[in-house]
Length: 259
Ligand SMILES: *Cc1c(COP(=O)(O)O)cnc(C)c1O
Image (cartoon, rainbow, N blue to C red; front, side, top):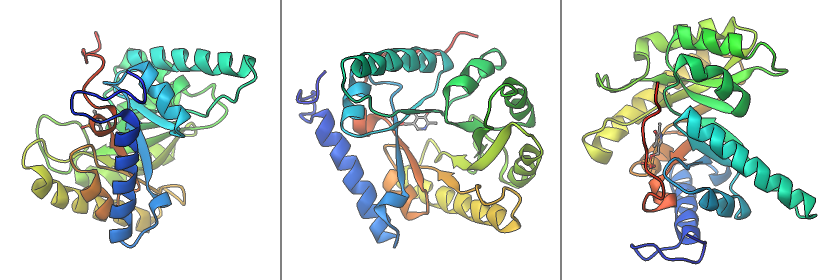
């Protein structure tokens, strides 16, 4: 589907992208912050590679996937496209990849090579595996600690009370750096349930910052998806992960990674 093509709901990719960006900017202003202080990460998991390329040409740099396999596939496809453009004398737009889903142990190594930020670190064991996998890298792997603020059993993430300790443990690792926290709103309850969750996560984030345990670079608060990113920005998110609101109807099916 190309930029100018309308989806079933009558909007184009560009219209949706521009709309999300202006809503983020408005939410930031409502919260007394600058629009440029909130980073939009487009979650491309249900989008096509063509949409990713089109968004890159609109200036979007940060993309997220939740399955390692699809992430690696897309990194390769996009890199090939960038190389081809460069060969033809065009400029190759920048791209940065984020991992936002659960990672199986056997896929950590490959993921680590491809991503700028891993949002989904929720155990010491996973952090240790990243540490080992990153041994050969020149710079540390940057991660967020995923917090299960709402306490839902089905969700990943550490308990709020354990987040600070995990950050401290990560800070002892040479090849991993804790950059902040990530959380998700409860599955049920809509925006009304999202707000207190985001507020709680913001408080936790500020508490950890105040202790200084993550250092100066502990400065990322990743929260908010298509249904609740405006609320998240109002509550202090400086990174939002938006999929469907930009991508539109799913272009690829989401099958779970095989183990
Ligand atoms: C899929 C996903 C998103 C984006 O969800 P949308 O509702 O499509 O915006 C954000 N964060 C995580 C962790 C996800 O898995």
